[in-house]
Length: 201
Image (cartoon, rainbow, N blue to C red; front, side, top):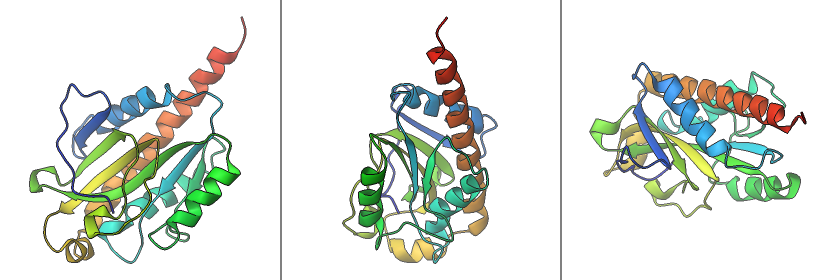
């Protein structure tokens, strides 16, 4: 679980925060992901790391995203973290070690749940740079990702572990579906365009 969120300026192109109920949420996330992906080398391996556990409704956002992405069985990215095989505090360090030893120059996208202000609950964020999982519940874990996506699943600031355990599963599932479909669409579009640009005239 990621630390408490902060508000982002609309002028900050490195970050996006959009309510999951916004009619244009898919388009906004896809376009922002494309912005970041185009800065990656076209030959880089895309690796998605979905962090969390199915033992907590609030913290299962990552594994739900991973499980949704796994259904596409896509060769366009490598996936770590599903409901069946979650990536969490106990195995995160080993998972990252495996990723960097298996994939040459990977472009890592981290996915996690986070807590935030009450007005931000239900928002999805796309942020440049690594996420810091576990900080919201006082755990020291390694940073993850060249970019990351987080879903603000509940209110932070007090008894975070209890809050996570009592988060509405319906909200987490809706947010996970949006993140998974937007991420898949962005990677597929980026790969298609990169392939076309690589074809000599």
